[in-house]
Structures are given as C-alpha cells and as structure tokens.
Image 1 (cartoon, rainbow, N blue to C red):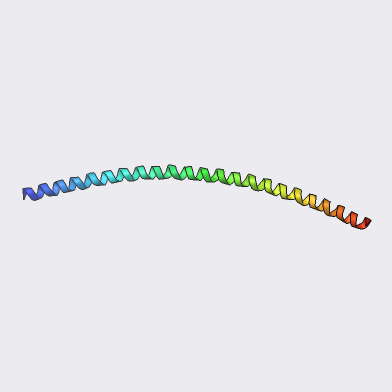
Image 2 (cartoon, rainbow, N blue to C red):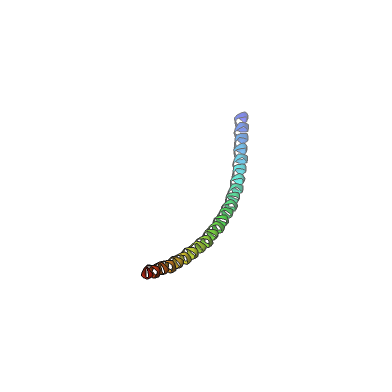
Length: 83
C-alpha cells in the first residue's frame, strides 16, 4: 500500500511539474508569437506605404504622358491640315 501511494505521489508530482513547464513554455511562445506578429504587421505597413507612393508616382507619370500624347495628337492634326 505504501509503495502504491509513493508511486502515485511521484506520478502526480511529475505530472504537475510537466504541466507547469508546458504552461510556461506556452506563455513564452505566445509572447514570441505576438512579437513576431507585430513585426510582420509593421513590415507589411511599410511595404504598403512604399507601394502607395510607387502607385502615386506611376499615376502621375501616366497622366503626364497622356497630356503629352494629347499635345502630339493636336500637332499631328495641325500637320494633316497643312498637308
């Protein structure tokens, strides 16, 4: 009986230590995951900001080129009228 009680006590203590260690490991993982998530979100926001500025520059260039094309078309029409 004493031996069974001792084995049960050691088993319970081992299980408690295991659960405590696993609990601490999960807390560290959660904190690490949160930190990584914050870093990834910051990286994505930076990338999105860069994409927005690139698209803004691209749209400005396209609008400028469209204006140049309209001016060229007007000159071509004038030359057609002359010929």
